[in-house]
Image 1 (cartoon, rainbow, N blue to C red):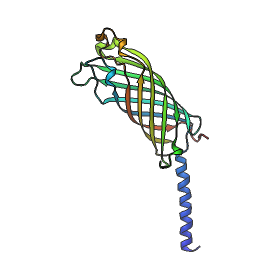
Image 2 (tube, one colour):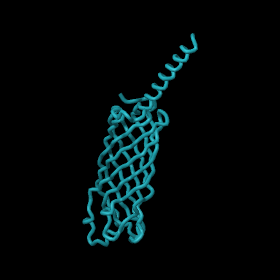
Image 3 (cartoon, rainbow, N blue to C red):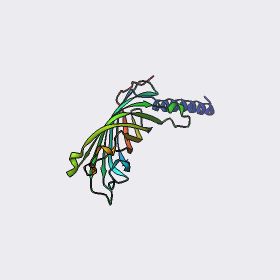
Image 4 (cartoon, helix red, strand yellow):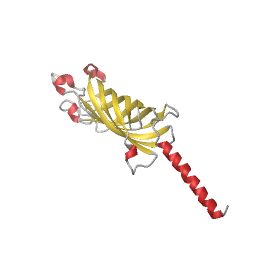
Amino acid sequence: MQPHLKQYVLLFIFFCASHNLSAQFRETSKWKALFAVGVNYPTTDGFVKGTYAKSVNFPTVNIGLQHMFKRQYGAKLDFGFNRFKSDDGSPEFKINYTRVNAQFIYDPSEYIGFLPMRMRTVLYTGPGLAFVKPLGNLAENKQSYLNFNAGFELHYAINKKVSLYTDIAYLYGFTSLEDYDPVLEGLGAFNGSVLNVTFGVAVSLSGCQYCD
């Protein structure tokens, strides 16, 4: 075989191998476990007058289990924990905000032409239940109410089984400060919405099982 012809053959083989490897990163595992850590911002209208939290609070922890029915859509059940702390000038408090949400997932990655093969984006939304518990002397002001979560994830595949991702979510609380009367009983309680920004790892649990 002539040298220049051999170069073309090797180049063709390399291209095919690269294409197959890249395509594998777009395969959708049926089952995935997700774990992420980050920060949160609770809306100011969720606190009684004169009480407010820091703009950026740590930690936020999310743990989820995801099942894809098809390549483009599936469902996710996840658990989240947030901690809020009082800001300067506010009465001192710490609040634990815990939630459980069931969500519908949609993956439009195949329709986004400019997205690199190793990357994919996931949109999700769904209802849940929030549990709010102030700490310290305000512990009796605990409460629970419905919420609705909506957000998106941007994933980068390290290999076929593991990807790193960023998750931005908004948790809307179906509740009101009017639940607290007199107002002082609401000190340290939170009846509002939360914006979360987290960074995490997604791991395939289904081995070589991929969605159609």
